[in-house]
Image (cartoon, rainbow, N blue to C red; front, side, top):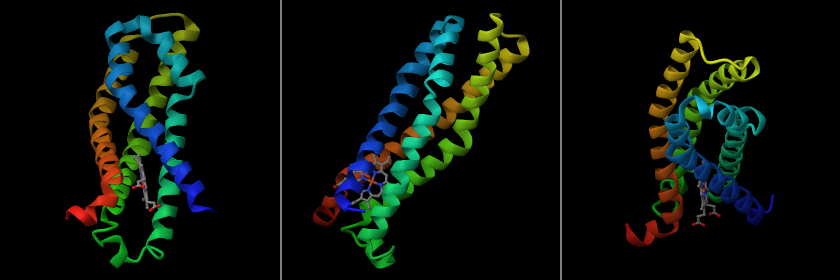
Length: 173
Ligand code: HEM
């Protein structure tokens, strides 16, 4: 594939991934938690009808696949000497950080958003408040995904800083 098209896909999907995760964790989720039960329909609409978590996961997967492809092309097929050379090291560091972050998102955060979606789905269709059991499930998943969310934000921030500055590492270091 033409490297220009690959860069366009990579940077476009990466921008969406990082922007939506930061907006969700720092703005949307705290606002929904502050509003409480009144946010149930909104959160269900976002998760179920708009497929928010699946869309974010897809943008992350596209970023990672296109990034690995770019890395293979620009490092003579993942040659360690090129990957660790200071002129390319920023892309390697950013790439590793983004891949680890993707793994946390896909394997830990995403399944929890599915639990929230299913639980809220029952509340919306049956038009009732949560049972103590469901309340416990929602509180636990929110706590767990917020904790993992900070790791995700850090991983993405490292990836963005490394990718954005990579072409200058050779000059500065
Ligand atoms: C948070 C996720 C990511 C974001 C926001 C992101 C962003 C970017 C940006 C803005 C550039 C252009 C930098 C420049 O031209 O100097 C870039 C280039 C690049 N990215 Fe990423 N990236 C991400 C993840 C990844 C991953 C997971 C990999 C690979 C494992 C990767 C590999 C690369 C490579 C090799 C280039 C250089 C392409 C070239 O030399 O033409 N990126 N990325």
